[in-house]
Image (cartoon, rainbow over all chains, first blue to last red; front, side, top):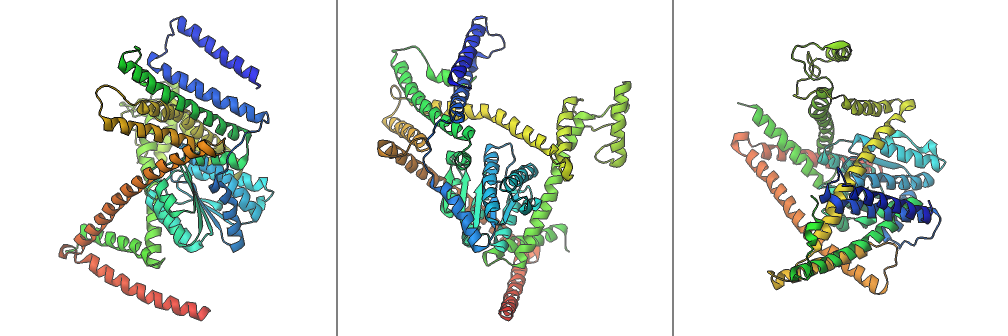
Length: 287
Length: 277
């Protein structure tokens, strides 16, 4: 889709919405008009930049130290003749962090396939096991090494949070992996895992959007991808135009968000001073 | 007299001390506790999911209990005929007449049943691709469902929370707090801006953002450590209770036995290591 088509489609949607609104907008909850526009703005911005990236336009992405360390960690494991351990979090595929973790697993698997390094992925959810296997299998096939892949690379331990932590700790103590990746959503087990990985001298790279667990990973890991760095990682590693365009789109949304915050503060000030009659807080409240 | 409570206390103490023995090093006690924990919990959760989700919410809606015990109509007879086969195979999960959980019949639940069966087909390597449909459904459904929630709480909610009050009935301290909040939010957002190099004034704002993030992480770390300490105190309180005469001094006996066995194990494994070398 080129720019012309994009603007034509977006304009068409807005014109149709205006007509629908003038006709009395049946079934539309007026209190959610702000959410409607938020969805339109967010979706259109991201689609616009994905299209740009797909057309081959150059999109600059600054370097993130943690991402550079991925290859270094796998390389270190290869040199030491030790396996790589990948922990994709403890929640199911309905969490966006787990989805990001499984995507990054595919990239790590490509490296382990290339270097012929053993990969071990213990999981806590059956659907994650299936998705993880698919991701790893695809990576090994893409690298031309399907012979190195076997289903047990991605194996189920248990659904229970601390039993899973105990199991992963046991694997770490016995297999002594040289590189440990924690990429996904974590809860209270994060420090138990990261501390054990630290004690065996493994190079550890964590990535999570769980704000409460980031401090533990920062403390015990060599590199930590915090918050959105973690979601951007898959785009960086794959250079896939869809993902790179999505990162650029999200950046533009951040600028829009900052502008919205500043404008909202000014509007509230004017309203409080009685200069205008528009309550921004009421507008921002979803009914 | 040895009651079930006392046996339970001894098992709890043994497992607690076995897990604590990991502080020394990986050893047979820890391995035993770990394998029991992983195995029992895997079985426990499988059972819990079946009896709290699949049986009442899925089968309870597909084959709800019929008061007369008989289905009416041609479709009903065939439908409950299928159920009777399950009833014949495993009666406790499929009781006579249907699953009585108070739900009415809702045939939309055939979709999750089919998706579940497709997931199970992955045990056959040639039919493994069926599982992708289930994964696609879960991921797609979750993405759509959570997009609204994230936009509501993380975007619009964040903007609303940042709209600080600067005039009227507000103290100077609250205004300063509000300004810090807004500066922290904006600087934090700038730190996560990836498509521009963090240099010059832009880099300075990003650095302020990371300082704010680190301060919040530090506070969060301290808070979590406090929580963990309270959990540790809880375990020690239990060990102290089970060390009393009511429980035949379980903590003390087991601690002593484990220390002796660990000592013997350490010396024998050291001898074996030396012999191997």
